[in-house]
Image: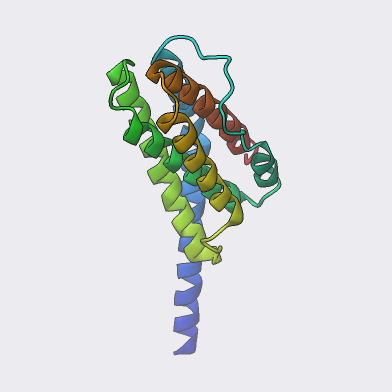
Length: 184
């Protein structure tokens, strides 16, 4: 009787581990292609990327900290960053003069990545009991809140604001791509 339960438990653990590997296989095989596509769409949305600096400091130390983290933490952080970027673009860019198709395609790709990485994060939590709360994710949330408040709400010119947001998000996505590439 106990032998049957033991084997069932072992089989469930093995199947769960394969699911984690499968979702990470998705990121290994599809992430790079989608990343190149959304960076290209970001470039095509509007004019040149500005040289102007944002009034919010870029969280370089946060990315350095996450660079030394475990794989699960990197995936979870990347997922949270994609969510924040999607939310920033989706909620505040209704009146921009960018190519709407490119903006929609950009958001669809980010949402696709978010969904796939989110399934990976859920499996990490379930299988490996990775803690759902993480200090770097709270710092990332504060950064995006400041960016939204100081750039999108306080800057006068819509054109300079949206160009500055594109620049900052491109920087985030490029660094996140480097972090993801280091996983494999």
